[in-house]
Image (cartoon, rainbow, N blue to C red; front, side, top):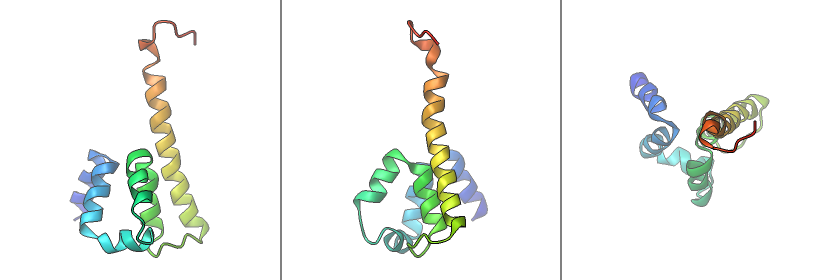
Length: 98
């Protein structure tokens, strides 16, 4: 099981979300209170944050500072992923003055 989990995280957070949702759908229903739109938006826009939120709050209540820290780390990874893509591709723009 540990090797499967590690492989999923290496494939990407979206693959991990899909497999985790297929294995434990009740946990996802509990965490997101049977809402459908929030996990879909998280899957599309902030996959690491969504994974961190599901990991940190198994009951759906985010009360401890440790849980907030885990979610914040997921958010930082998502933001760095978006910012790194723009920074890495800056040479492709012909009139970039930076």
